[in-house]
Length: 115
Image (tube, rainbow, N blue to C red; front, side, top):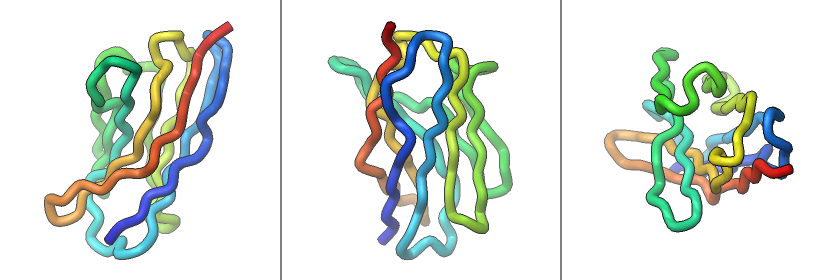
């Protein structure tokens, strides 16, 4: 089993920044790609960004140039730096990890972008 705990969400004004963190624990050996998803009210969960254990990244088009995903394998932690936040970024953000083809999810952290 892999446990994922997110932190760093909150309320921020448009144009502001937040940094999300996700710490993995438990059976962390051989964790592969990790990523961040988000789900806004009434919408489906969508991929925001992902990173392989080799550091290759992938971003949703709407966040390119604003969000940066990074990973510290020594700390078993993945980060999402979010800059120039927009109201449409408001959602619950979930950390995801894949191990041997099985997905694991964190409990989610709320990000609200509002003036």
